[in-house]
Length: 208
Image (cartoon, rainbow, N blue to C red; front, side, top):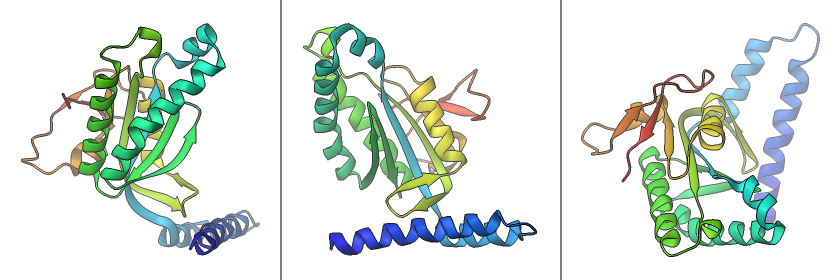
């Protein structure tokens, strides 16, 4: 099974690289090639980027072992919640996670659950040991390349919101997420007054 999965991911990356190479040729019909790429890899996903607030300062103050401990604890707490809500953890980079969900409501419920788990964990711990989670969520059509990576506007926006904009305990979402939430869901959002220019309209998910 693992062997088949490896072949699938490699085939996707190889196909994309060949199409990009074809697109770079003089006189290439870029519009046609772009349509082929979207036909092959275009899918709708909710994209979640998480980050840990104040992490760099903690590393500088308490050292690399403290860094590894915090990473270990965050993964131990959060990965089961991701699995429970049918998320796929695509990447772990330092203190950040890239997670994808087919269902945007499940993505929001997962992130709310992750924040709740962090709050419970932090309740009786010293400040330097707390796991302070920030998150950004996007939803829309993206290019998914096997289980290797995802690309697109909603990916970039979720990254900007989760890694650069959100504070500890915040979940910030794009317009695409708000539009995908059905009426009567009971979920509440408040519009950000000064969202990042590259993101456009953005909202705070009032999950508490």
